[in-house]
Image 1 (cartoon, rainbow, N blue to C red):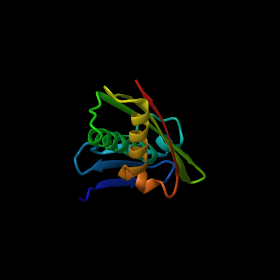
Image 2: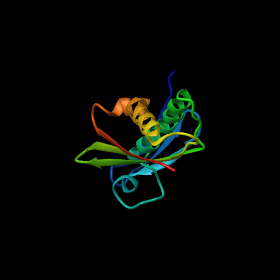
Image 3: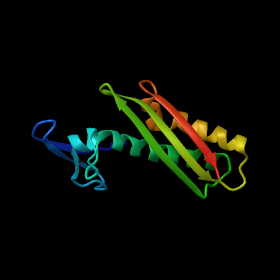
Image 4: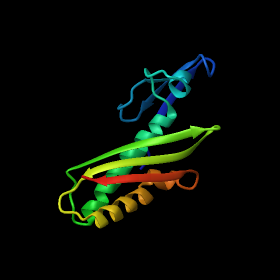
Length: 139
């Protein structure tokens, strides 16, 4: 499998602007700017936000797969990912997970969540360079 996205940038780093599009069209000329990355602008995206979205989505899918393999079907998995960026690099990805899974014990839930955290493709790609942490709650 191979997937792609395109980015286009015009202008200087601080005053310029860019657009990002994905192969599927889910993002189509989505704007990104210096202010959306390092400032308070909320009208555009940024690379760290996109990594957070990718990690949250990837974890949720892997968690569902791990649960299915263990004989459980989640009613709902909500995953928030917080990316920590500083000194020119991402240093941490923290997953906050809330899930409703009928019939699962707390111990099995914790084991499945840990497996998904360690083995989702985005976690695997990031783990050699950054700290990955998680808080998982069964509701």
